[in-house]
Amino acid sequence: PTTVADLTVDLAGVPLRNPLLLASGIWGETGASMASAYTAGAGGVVTKSIGAEPRPGYPNPTVEPLGPVGLLNAMGLPNPGIDEYPAEIAVARAAGAPVIGSIFAASAREFATLARRMAGTGVVALELNLSCPHAHGYGSEIGSDPQRVERIVRNVVAAVDLPVMAKITPNTADPAGLARAAERGGAAAISAINTVRALAIDVRLARPILAHGLGGLSGPAIKPVGLACVWQIFEAVRIPIVGIGGIGSADDALEYLFAGARAVQIGTALSGPGVALFGTIARDLSARLSDLGIDRWEEAVGRAHGTNGAPPPPGGPRFRRPR
Image (cartoon, rainbow, N blue to C red; front, side):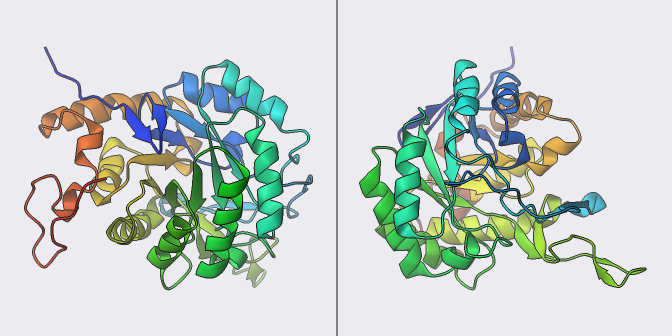
């Protein structure tokens, strides 16, 4: 009989049946879509980023598929606001899904106030969106300064009794420095990465395709960027990392695992197969780990760094304690 590896994971004290999470984004807008992701095999779900007030977002076009490269978007953080959103979380929770609440705000004080509201909805953890590349006054505009990141995280951690995850931007010289700042502020985990700042031009009109101009790139093209960030962050912090960016297969997830991720998030890859992809990847992952002689997903976190008794890569880092 084929042995299957154990995919269960403890993420900052939150038990998950597997490490595959629905990424924050359009699939996390409604309770029904979050519930369907969990029912299809996800280990948990992250909500769309929610703010204090409803936001319409940017005018269309907000999304542009770029073929095999991925997806370009500048949505402008459209969301129904925290007053309306708890009903959607309730639907996802009724399906049994562990829900991680993603929030965005413009200041440490607003983040803390919003975090209290989100914590009251029954989410198992919070993810702070410090990294959206295209919303003025939010996201990476405030999340690129380590001192602000530390202050925001510290305020939120003091305000709620839940694990707080900081989602880091790749659009900076030192993502690992931002992760260290979040850890100093008391973050329980780091999510990396958000989309990569990007642009597409319509050559007939000689103007940007997206109404907002600049957008964020997601999908296969950003996987090497995400992996590099996770790799560097793993070397820099002791708290767990959630890997994000270009994951669409079991092997993609394994690359992130070996780079240092304890869990991963999947978003753009769902645009073809839909949420059934979660079940497919979970099954493939179990079999693949067994083939590699790995009994438990968790035991291989950071393996490419030479942890867990494996020899370090040539010129690579010395052995470090697996988290």
